[in-house]
Image (cartoon, rainbow, N blue to C red; front, side, top):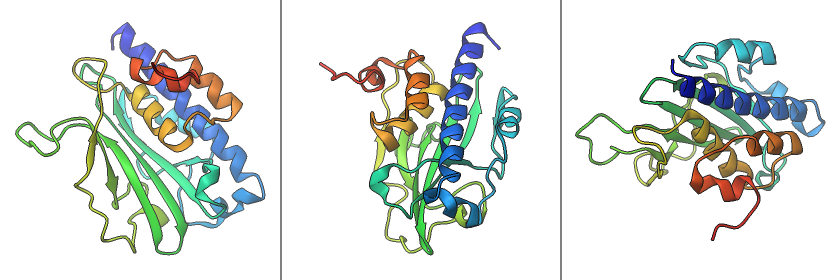
Length: 210
């Protein structure tokens, strides 16, 4: 793995760890008690999470990272994240964010790589809704929202690097999509320590793009 890829891997892992730490903090509060009662296979510790991210190519398997829910989702929201990555020349990754509210009420989105060459519909880096989740348990499949299309819309992602989306930048996209610029302090410090793509800098740094 190149020196650049090692740097990107380190940044990606640091951000996922920061998200996990905030999620664990929330689970230990009165409001986060529901995270312990739902059928979800959470990472049990930071060490377990870090160990799962050691390979240059890998995924979370049947494990999930708990995320602290944004306040505007309401007190019943339970948010989880699942990741798949490779730090080779293609910088392939997939990040799924799942939001569970009550029984039979769940939805999610994923940041995904282009479909195989020749697929003009999804042949680009994109974000789209999903009802099929990795990780199992309560997050296996969303129900009650069969009317939501998982094909359209598929929002294109602008790339600042030729060849692929950096996993670290995909994690930043997922973080911003949930929290905007209202991150907890520790998470904010982690984000600001990363260069990020040019299109994300103004949000991460809390400024307004020109």
